[in-house]
Image 1 (cartoon, each protein chain N blue to C red):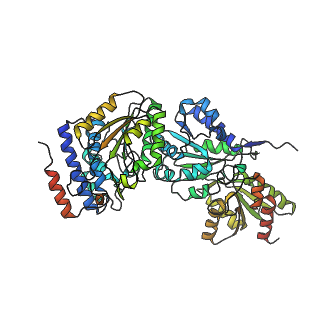
Image 2 (cartoon, rainbow over the protein chains, first blue to last red):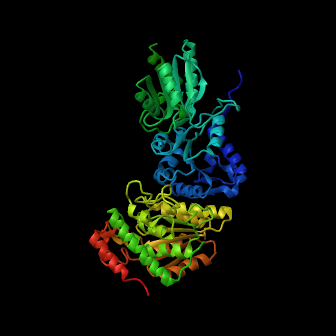
Image 3 (cartoon, each protein chain N blue to C red):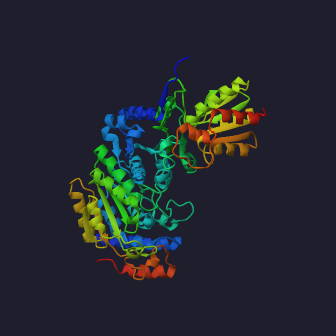
Length: 313
Length: 279
């Protein structure tokens, strides 16, 4: 068996943004004293005139980006997800979303991934909060390859966009030739007995769960729903109507994120059963990342168990 | 296309602008006359002395930018935009009405001539800094003007943005600090004392021009100086102003922050303003 290659989504971002910056002088990075963690160092060296560090001043960074975007720049505002979504929230709402400007907000260290930093730095609410703001697109890649491709796709996407990254090196799930389109769920595995819809680092948990289920003869469709807004309503509807047994998995509060988005579709369709696996509406703590996931039931075993319950096995 | 009027012509334009402010807020039935009147000299001097803008092409990339960080005084800017020909003057009668481009607070996606949407206080200056930075990046000559309220200066983001303007040496940025001394709940000195705002901006690396912000001659001189001095420092014109300026019963009256005049009050205000033309 070949060795699993592991790379962080933030590294995918760092490489993609540098390529974008070299190709287009209008691509701009606004850092907030977290450039090392957020992997903007390469961009800073390659495109020094397009790089601005505003220090520990997130709110002003969002406004700055709006001003730059109004003058034709394509700014990427980069800091940890907890701060980029919540410290800057109202500035994102008024100056980025209400204005419908082409500002990209990067939320690094999303979910529980800044594990040892504790709850202050763990963003479990970001995607849900930003999903409620008109005009905003919300994206979370699940591996290095999709991170690179979705970041590249974000550059000339119309309107405001939030993209969440994570801290750890995780298995590379996709080949370099696979395509990723913002707003379109990515089919990871086909199956007709159950469906697992996941995003971010939990897609690999979904794949492991699908393997466990396959051992019991249960064929599972796994979808990487990297964009939760606009949600790929067609793919979600198909999972609900064709299969009807859907488990959602996310490193995010079960309130507001992918699970909620899927439930909204299911409730309006009046079709399909959904079980949400994610953060159980409680804050994290300083602990190993895998332990934080375990404590919230975000494990391959629990995903498989939940799917079996849904299909009555 | 910079339009440059004499001081006397500017003073009379400013009376015209104040009359439109009072009239449109009366017709809207709500709005913020106090601050719209205190900032009137700055807005007038910008549009008829300072700004290179094209009413026929509001999105012209080379234009100077104007940011109303204290967005609630939108009527002052709407009056100027209408008088400049960005849209028909009749539109002023639709202020705050359903379907109008003249929202209660400025919207760049709805109203021609608005360079950035504002309303929630403290945010416009950061946007203005971003615009000034974009100009520097592109080696473009356009300049950025931003009106900030003294109550608004209580917002922390103002000072984050001031830091950024200093770091990136944005001498193409002019902040007008409308220091009228009042905010919704009362005098700024009681609600939350600002201390010496000039000293504060100076400490943040700005050149300060402290003037009577309702004196057109001083306003024009300060703008000229701010334009002439290219020393890598952002500029702040600290204007001591009178809230409600030009309408006797609105002057220095906290209650006129966000109250529309009745038709009778409007008529009285317009009669007073009519006597303020300089011949």
